[in-house]
Length: 67
Image 1 (cartoon, rainbow, N blue to C red):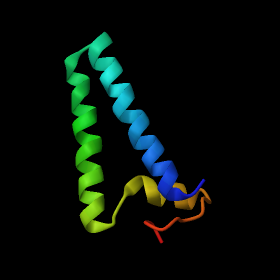
Image 2 (cartoon, rainbow, N blue to C red; image 1 turned 45 degrees about the vertical axis):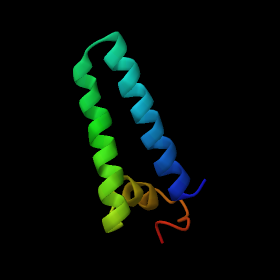
Image 3 (cartoon, helix red, strand yellow; image 1 turned 120 degrees about the vertical axis):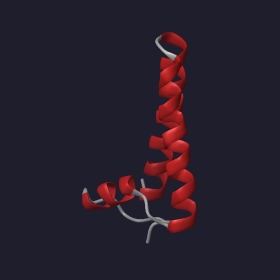
């Protein structure tokens, strides 16, 4: 998997996890969804994604977005 796909899969998993936790535990878990969305939005404009840097350091190959 490329860095792009890993980042998108992780973001999607975090959104789904936070929605499930908001339903089962506390609505405050929706703040995690807001954080993931804000990070995706700023990444679209700046090109900086902390997770992409971590995954790149672990040896994943870059895709089109994170070269």
